[in-house]
Amino acid sequence: MSTATAFLDIALIVAFVALAIGQLLCVVRLFRGPTSGDRVLALDTLVINAIGLVVVLGMTQGVKVYFEVSLLVAMLGFVSTVALARFMLRGDIIE
Amino acid sequence: MTLQIVATYAAAVCLLIGSAFVLIGVIGLLKFNDPMTRLHAPTKVGTIGIGMLLLAAMLVAAAEGDPSAHELLIMAFLFATAPVSAHFIAKVAIHQQSCEAPPPPPRDDTWSTLNSPDRKMAEGPASGAP
Image 1: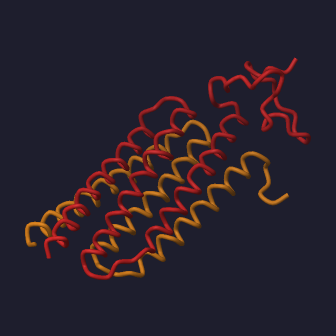
Image 2 (image 1 turned 60 degrees about the vertical axis):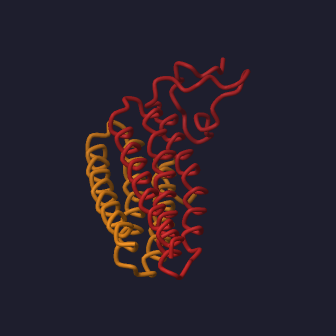
Image 3 (image 1 turned 90 degrees about the vertical axis):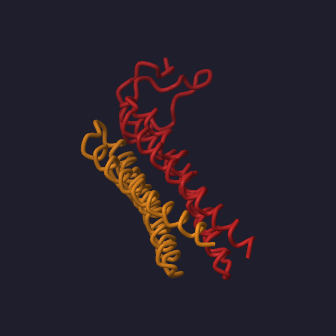
């Protein structure tokens, strides 16, 4: 059992590092993005990777409330992506 | 006891696979050189990566003795909303004509996002309307 939990700890650290590097590369695309659609896509990817970070944090600390947090982040990310895309399509969010 | 060990190992492997998928998706977002091509990488690969992370969370919760199905809800929500947001971002790319040439619409149709009644769009190079 101890080797299994040690392997799980190493996998958790690897997941944290990979998600953090992913967030940094997303920020690079957010600043470099030539079109505004790329910037919206980078923001959407940032939110989805933040859901992964929250899930891995909940696995590390063993707290159940992080799953409600990640569900809220997912809903907010989807609504904000659609609102930004609507604003770029129409110049207005609610017609 | 041994089932617990197998679930812990499976959760660790799912974590490694999920983080690798997420990282590959973000590298694709950074390295591709066309807005439509860039749309492919994070919206598919990244969604699968988050799904694997949630599967790992379910396996860890089952190994610790209290299995939960909350993660299935997040997974279903993500898998349902990722194509919708990708569709909206693709519509933005077609609408602003930032992609090289949108694929030709069938027969004598036009792209419905380009002929909105209240806005006059410039004629794209590949719009098939006469």
